Length: 289
Ligand code: HXC
Image 1: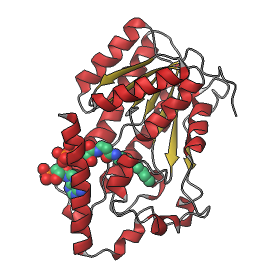
Image 2: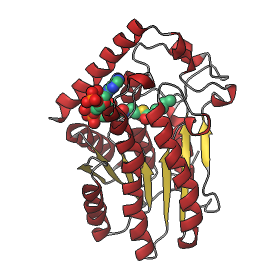
Image 3: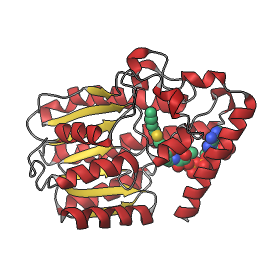
Image 4: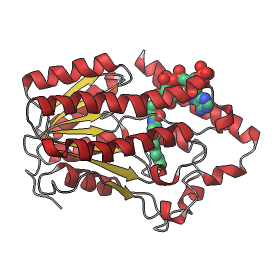
């Protein structure tokens, strides 16, 4: 779909780039010549991904363990990158989410998600954007959102609220930073199953239920998301800014939000679901320690 050198020497930072959608975008950017910076909380997966991509595409993939909830760590990391040379692009992909009835959420549960998605994404955007402005350097930001920014969604309220805030940031900064040559767009993927998301959002693997809400009758293919992200990151469409593009097989247009079907679950179903999600979280934590 694109020329091989479309992103040649573009320096692109992808948060949460070691796994899932972040990794998939990283692979496609590298395939088109980009120099990558990936960060996340687990060193082992970052290293593995960096090795895999740099070997396959003979491009440099830098990695750094970073929790984007820690604002000073975020700023120090971005400072260290810009000391060498400015970035050209930022993909705010790192996120946290799990399904839960909202009445059962603790305040810490709400914060766990809002601190990553709402606060962390702002810290990263602010750290990168202010350096672009200081050095009169143009850049492109892609925020990975969800279609819940338009519909809201039951059972993922902290995520829906936080992503909606980042959607507002997308439009606001496109207007405020347009004069500096900084473009800011969003991608709102529908169901693109990845291990991290599906363990927390579809722990019982009920793809059938979820697919019945997608007019195209299938989940997204990674190449479709990769192509859209690459198009938005490349030069040639600078006039396209402040937009959030849905890529969901028209799922959200059918109404009801992604998780409406969870209304039929009993308390016992939820208890089982919570256990599956906690097991996945604990496995991740064990990996981190
Ligand atoms: C209720 C839960 C819970 C659950 C955690 N909590 N899981 N409450 N139901 N299933 C509560 C805990 O009880 C605790 O509150 C609080 O949340 C913090 O839990 P920790 O495990 O200590 O948090 P932390 O280690 O910071 O982990 C953050 C996380 C975790 C968000 C909870 O899931 C994570 O690290 N996720 C990263 C990867 C991820 O989520 N990927 C999916 C993104 S998908 P108490 O009060 O008990 O102490 C996405 C959109 C996809 O964003 C769109 C698809 C259509």
